[in-house]
Amino acid sequence: MLDKLTYAGRKENFQDVKDDPGFEFVHGAIEDSNAVAEALEDGIDAIVNFAAETHVDRSIAEPDAFVRTHALGTYVLLEAAREREMRYVQVSTDEVYGSIDEGTFTEESPLRPSSPYSATKTGADLLVQSYFHTYELPASIVRGSNNYGPYQYPEKLIPLMVLNALHGDKLPVYGDGMQVRNWIHATDFARAIGHVLAHGKAGEVYNAGGPDEQANIEVVRRIIELTDASEDQIEYVKDRPGHDRRYSLSSEKVRALGWAPRVRFEDGLAETVAWYRENVWWWKPIRSGDYRAYYERQYGKTLS
Ligand code: DAU
Image 1 (cartoon, protein in one colour):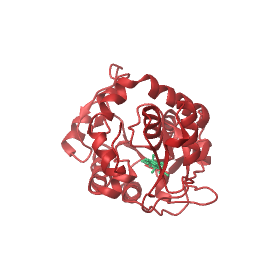
Image 2 (tube, protein in one colour; image 1 turned 45 degrees about the vertical axis):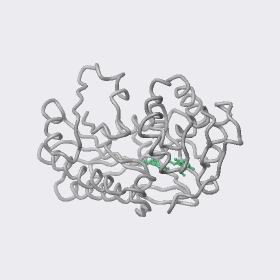
Image 3 (cartoon, rainbow, N blue to C red; image 1 turned 60 degrees about the vertical axis):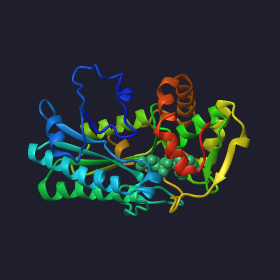
């Protein structure tokens, strides 16, 4: 595994697998070709590019890291794969399709990204497709919907709301809270990526969406119930600029290969809340570190 360990990456996140046979960690960036070469030294037969700057709000405030990681980083990995004739899988997102009010996106839907985050992810997808068409690189793309589960950095909706709820802090809902997201548990998405790596066709794109869609305000209300917090903590705040209203993915193509999500949102959310309750050791250093300054910049409020 090659990882830059940016603000959202920590060795604690892979402590459960670090002693597994075959696991090796190289500290470095995907845009650094020397680090990539070191990570690919021996016994590696495929590259799966999970590396990304993922947070839409950060891409709006400071897009530069997004361009570097998604454009340059993907290029460096593709070149490394081409040189070594390796299988390549790009981990992508439903955000490349933009927002959809009704119906669901298929792999044939037009690409209409709306934030610097999703635009740079779209650029990376197109570069991957060009390497298939031009150099016959055996590359596939997997586009996931909103991931959630343990170990998720608390800038994202679910962990942010869980930790704020547990601390008695305000729960900042953007706009009217009626934006809809298609939630997929991280373990289901990980299985989808493995499935495409093993069974997907080169040159193809596969959507992997979760089994349930829910409006943000409903997610927040459920978190309030699960944490015994109060509805008074909800605070409607200024909307995200260019905020996508709804994401929805059709996953028929990867389902036809034999994958299906296993975790319903209701169960996965309850388990995730329980995980954050029990794993104070994991989030305490984050909530008392740089994240506080980020939160103040983003929300104009201090965390308790
Ligand atoms: O759809 C897949 C995408 O899901 C991934 O490609 C992105 O990397 C990932 O960050 C996520 O994007 P979203 O923008 O949908 O996730 P986020 O957790 O930031 O927000 C989810 C929804 O909740 C969105 O409608 C914005 C809203 N929200 C978010 C935060 C952080 C709030 O209302 N308040 C908040 O404080």
